[in-house]
Length: 373
Image (cartoon, rainbow, N blue to C red; front, side):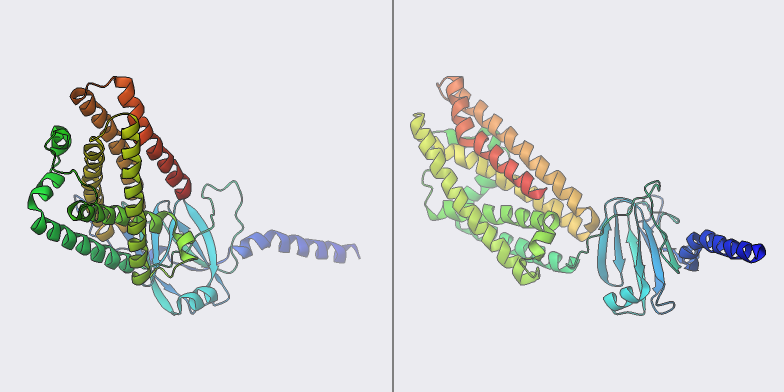
């Protein structure tokens, strides 16, 4: 009787010890199947790893994935997700097959400088349990349903429309066009002379220019929404070409109304500070700064959208930060110009610019930062 009890206890002990190993039993290991897919040379590192996944064999098993931080993963021709940190997770084989509707598919991991061994894939009987002592941290992965080509098509079409508007403006008002796009005009500030060219805000030439600038700024805003508030947009729009185009026009219209309100506000504050006839050069000095900065923003976005799509989010974050400091520098430059050309006391000019520019800009910037987070 003692021998029987001992054998039963020994059997259960073996079962308990083998459970962790059974849960992580490897059915297939793709370690030797990885291939480098980038154009590796002396001057550039490899940027992708490719492996073919079999989603037919062992349908009740699981595929265990390990991906490095800042990597973009494609399965087949679909963007699967972006891993912000080192990531481990498992997916059932049958679920992957039904989700992507394929039997075999290439899995591609994009990351600058990625090497063999940075990503690991195994087909296992049961997924291993992750604990807090592991170096790699398992995270909830957010699927990205939009297609890169949709965003590229929308961006190119929007840029072509803006260029068409700029070409029309150049044909109709060549002198104003030359003044508006010249960066040196921010230093010389010709608009502050008594013979300044822009003296009527609600004229067609001025409104046309304001519309074109708002279209550029709106394009930057829509790109920011797509990359920073995608989940929020996805619940409200289909995020195809038509919806992105309509969103762009809607944001441009909102910015146009805000621009008009800003000019009216500047005019009221200038009247209160007895700075009449200076609201025009003040307003168009900073509007010209926004136009030139937005043009460079579009160029940077075009480069990353067409060449380094995975780095677009970081590029946008840096561009928005740069725009913030450039605008602040523009306000400081405006203060120096007005201080040299006006007989007003410095603290009057400082108070005027704080009320008319700095306070509203900082409030809007804080609101945008909160929404982005």
